[in-house]
Length: 433
Image 1 (cartoon, rainbow, N blue to C red):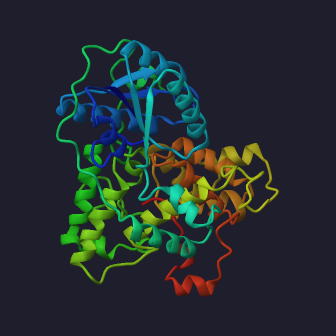
Image 2: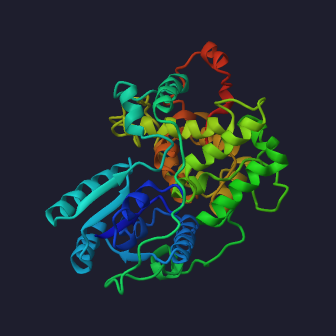
Image 3: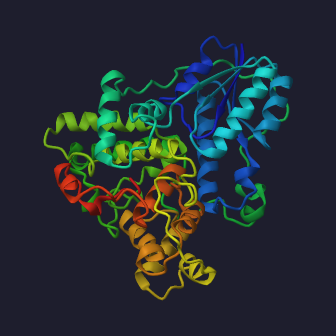
């Protein structure tokens, strides 16, 4: 069975259910990534994040080669280049990780139809979240849960039936083909053209380098920090936006693992299990929603909300979002985006965002409140678009959820008594792990 495993976000070899499904009964494996013009040519993915992606792809290719395989890069719309590859390579099966984003869902539906018409079997697996978010949504009655405490009840029920486990890294892979017409290696950043043509291949300002290897090493450093005591005691509100890490990896006072989770360089289940091991050694550990486990559960919470909410990334037609008539002032938006507001704290944070691709969650709170309900009264959708361009960890579900939260458009209808009952101070709203 000649099989294509289509990498999209799960850019890793450890705990990769789609990869595991692909290699079962496989004679020849084609690990594929598509450079889709929807992202590459749109100009909406900033230089830092595109660089991080390419670094992650090179690391993935190196890992595949260590197992006797390699990564094949296709350039073009997947609905065009994948069927062509199926024909030319004699492929009988396609495996990939599911995605909840609107573009991805529409794309995958079309790819599935094309594959079926060509007699290509399609295998899909959930791998980007702790649980199958579709199953979590069903537990909520197919309606998005907009309070964290309610979500935890559904999550607890889910993991009682399906405990969180992490799959091992394959020890070997089926051999690669002799050739793969139409495929290439991972390009240099400048080869993508457009806004990337004159961009440097590396930057010493960016918070972290892409790839599974860097992700696993960063996770290891954090869970082993002070023999696990740091991870056990971690509470999001207690972190500082100005603190530098003690071991020289450019980490601030949080883990800075969110870019790796966004691209799937790090499995959320692997991280969850590693933290659970720390908690087992430190019984007096922090609890959700402010603990490290709590941050992973916030991520899950937003994914379930996003899956169950049509028009989640906009105001109009979004049933969980307050229909606020925001102002629309292009000059104010540009001043905020370009760090020209005249407010030093806001402009410093926006400068760091543009140059490093990451800012601490308190800085995210500040600039988001300033743009929306605090000062400029511009739509949170506009802010989310800027974050989506600049952030290394720009995740569709989390980014738009955070912006709704911080603009008071959603997620703030829970009562103070409920906050106190669940140990949830209002200042602990989620941003970056």
